[in-house]
Image (cartoon, rainbow, N blue to C red):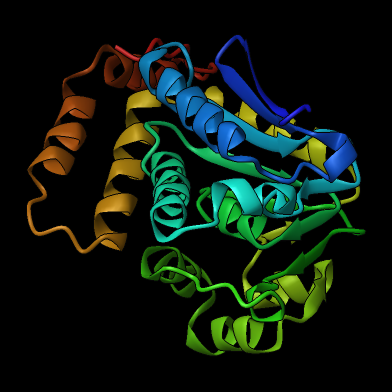
Length: 258
């Protein structure tokens, strides 16, 4: 039986990660969580990548949640539940802390683990027909504190409470109002691709330093040494020289990430 797959495609400086199990509305199996983590570990290693777009295959679903058909084999004991939750947490952490910005292109269903996955991304955009839901209370599932923290940081306490307590389905406009997505756009894939290319044209060291700073502030890190080093590296870079020269010459800069 197919357990879905994760596809990583890199064109130029833009990576695209596609979650693909269309027949099951891109529901996440344990193996897909494992492969998604591996994809983002590879993105971190590939220095040519400057930005990533995360999407689901097709237009009907981003991610519909966990693959429930696996629950009897993969989430049927305390140990297996702990293993599954750890893999989800590690994967979402890898996306949140990814070296480059990650853009979620959401088309269709974004439920449960799919919502948690989207909220791990830096930027989120949705197609008008998208729907959002945290259905744990309708299934008797517990939600671990780390994943709850991610949702709380994005939505705030009241919106998080309503989403969890009611298990309500939100349309795209409501999701935007709550902070689940930044904007609702007609062609979400084209929009996110264009945005990724716009980001990729900027100085990569500056973008990476900004992301490192945002992550450190969100995590309330006490030691900001690595952040300060990343910022200092920007001013020592060839790209800083190129940026000043391009500005003086009134031309687009050509950044190399050095």
